[in-house]
Amino acid sequence: MKPLLVLMFAGLLQGCTLLAVADAAGSAVVYGVKTTVNVLDAVTPDIINRKKD
Figure 1 (cartoon, rainbow, N blue to C red):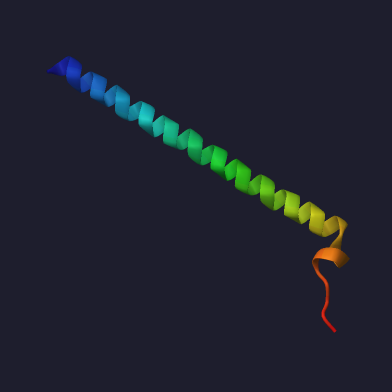
Figure 2: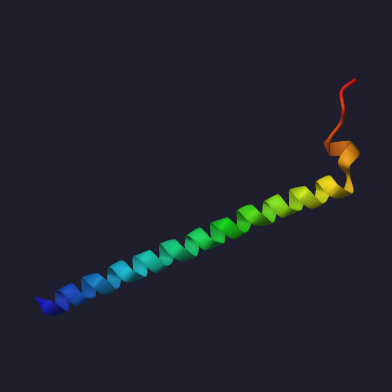
């Protein structure tokens, strides 16, 4: 019974690690896109932020 519990616990830890890595990768992508948008906005403010007269 103990070996089964150890294997289940190890599997759960691997699942949590996978979720943490996926979460970190997703956050990196989101912040990368935000940074790209901010840089483009700073470089070309007239094109992105057109004022409607």
